Amino acid sequence: MDTRLYKSIEFLIIFILLPVSFAINYSVRIKMGIGLLGFLYIVYVLLKVEKKVFKIAPNLKWQKFWKLTIFKLVIIAVLTTLFVWLTDSTLLFNVLLNKPKLWVFILFIYSFFSVYPQEIIYRTFFFERYKGLFKKEALFVFVNAVIFALGHIFFKNSLVIILTFFGGLLFAITYNRTQSTVLVSIEHAVYGCWLFTVGMGDMLGFPA
Image (cartoon, rainbow, N blue to C red; front, side, top):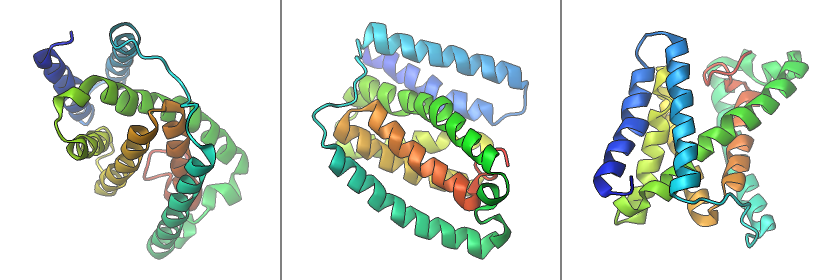
């Protein structure tokens, strides 16, 4: 389970073959079953094989984390607001203004039941398991962003792939710096919630 060959095959199955297979048309129930089994396997490996102990990263300066996150959020907010306004202004803050209860509900569900599992898979598991397979840290972070984008290929939307690639870069850099699943999940949730709020939710699979 710890050999280089085993990890390479494991990486190929979990992060390439499975995401690509989810883009193929077959039973959603089967896809959910495969996804659940995959997630349980990842949690098992993290806890029993890698002996991972989840922590918030107590030595991190929270003020610095929030300053960086808000700085990046401002840039993202400006760019995405302009994008929605120029492409379809009717979507701009549509759910927030017209369905505020749905907006609150979706943000809660997304933050706790989508973001956190994604970060366990794509950051915590990936970094703990495969860092030894890469000699250069920059390449390792880049590959993480690529497979995170590939994980969204089932949307069959090129803009989603681009957004998730750049998002993957940001999240990989944050995790690499903090080694905290909680902090990178907070950052992921902040940016994802903003995209839903500004009017890009339909494109990213949010109910609207």
